[in-house]
Image (tube, rainbow, N blue to C red; front, top):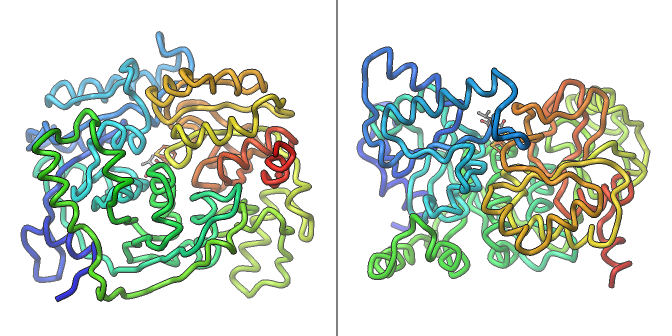
Length: 465
Ligand SMILES: CC(C)[C@H](C(=O)O)[C@@H](O)C(=O)O
Ligand code: SF4
């Protein structure tokens, strides 16, 4: 029988199926961050060891200070970091800690280190674990109780999701990126548009994306309701994976490559749902509201809630009130107070290069910080001189971590301030109490920095050409 990529990955990891249809799955890689302390405490309560510490990898990211790392000033943050150190040391788990030159956001670091590989099952107590599906891995976020279960057993109970395919065909226009594909489909289908499904991304526009772009796309799957994003591995994937520190080498790599070749949906595989998108129709997209589905092409205007249907009208009214925006105003006229370039969505080397290309030789009208996704991305960017482009423009170049994406490390947007952000969530208060977030791609963040308002990056690109 023909199978989808999801079926193949699921079947390869299924140990048994319960009477209620839930599957027990083997976990190849378990990634943990500071939030894992609840799970470690559960283990301690019952005096249980970690079943497979060598398959567990820990990262300091959510609370990682982006400045002053030598001596962490905030005692609450220091405590979170120390807990992670203590728990991982007690169980013999490898830790990419604050002072490790490889430290970074878990969803940037995993792939970068070659911990994430095609065909593996990857879990992490974090909703954006869908990112790793870009490699053709079965990757999903789990809750605190499930983290304890994986630590104790290296397995996870999970219900098989339905299979959905989003095909993006054709070529993306200049200045249009993977982030725009994601915001576009979420705006079209809604934040629960893919609930209960694993989304496999396919089509020529997806094949043409770099691994960085594919990770951005899979990262945002969860914002459209899907806990799983998937892309079949191909030559782009192999080229990225080869020679990564934890990736197989030599004969083992060749054997793996042969296995990975089968990781694609069969030509006649049936999906529960199929969506087609024409790449040429996607514009640089920005959010205007407080959920990722409240997004529009930058050339648009703030919608009139009166013109929307019932539930959406009310949500739009509330969002515009919080965001301090008026219906009918052109998006390009919205002034921002600051910019943030960072997060597991868009802080990889390619993202920084794209933003730097806009900022080179220009000045930012508003303050902002650039936080690379990992310290290795940071080092690479510095080797390429990108840090100078950012600092010459007037932006602050800081260390790696979740930073202003969620503000847990103290990097926040002030109440009422408006931020152009390369992150994935624009919820109320996400970047700080009363903070107003507009989600967009790195090039669009750079363009907003240059003009001090939401800006179509394509106009700045044309000026250059
Ligand atoms: C804090 C963490 C568990 C959370 C998540 O699950 O995604 C965070 O990373 C986020 O992006 O909101
Ligand atoms: S960068 Fe943001 S979205 Fe990503 S894991 Fe950290 S807090 Fe979550």
